[in-house]
Amino acid sequence: MIADVKQHLLSRPFEPFAIVTSAGQRYPVPSPEHAGIHPRGHRVLVWLDDGSGITISALHIASVEKDAPKKRHHK
Image (cartoon, rainbow, N blue to C red; front, top):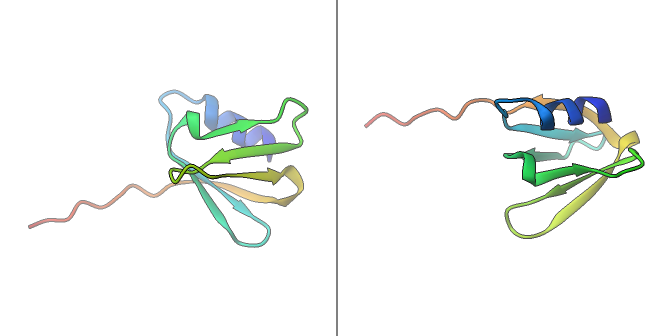
């Protein structure tokens, strides 16, 4: 799964995605600057918009999913 995260981070044009853990948590990655892979490749760090961050072990990454496009509200 680390390879999937890396592929998403390096893809151009970048498309937002989310990392889903084995416990069901979903962590959005809206830009390449919001995530990084530990140099040893065993963990992913995700920085959240509120200034906090989370470290996810490769063993707990269940999937990497493209974020669904946001729907526009029609007035």
